[in-house]
Amino acid sequence: MTRRLFSNRHSYIHFSINPPCTDALKLRKAIQDGLAETFGITASGTYLDILWIAESGSEIVIRLSEEDAPKLMAAVVITPVSPRFSTIKQTNFLPSLTPSKERLT
Image (cartoon, rainbow, N blue to C red; front, side):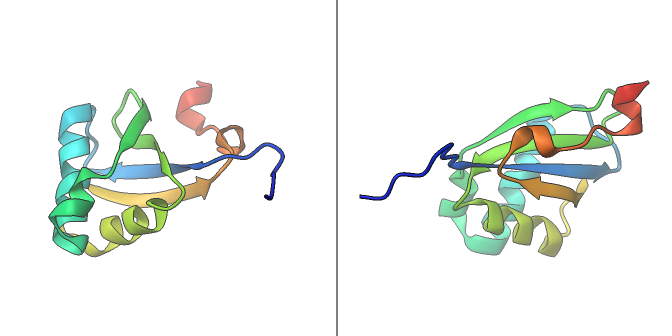
C-alpha cells in the first residue's frame, strides 16, 4: 500500500472565455456539449465544479478529477462550441493559480 502525503485527486483548470459569459449554466452546457462531441455521451456526464467566474465573464476556474482533466483539456481545444475556452493554467494545487489583474483591482 502506497501512501502519498497531501494526496490530491482533483485538478484545477483556469480558462479564459471568448466571448465573455457570466452564466454558469451556459458555460457548463458548453463544456458538456464539447465533451459529448469529442468523447461521446458518457463523457458529457463528467463531474465538475465551477469554482469561480470573473465578474466580466472572461475567465473561469473549474475543479474536476485528475483522470478527467486531460479529456476536458482536449475537448475545449477541439470543439467549435461557443463560448470558446482557452487554457490559462492547469494544476493540482488550487493556490498556485495566480490571480489575474482583474481580481486584483
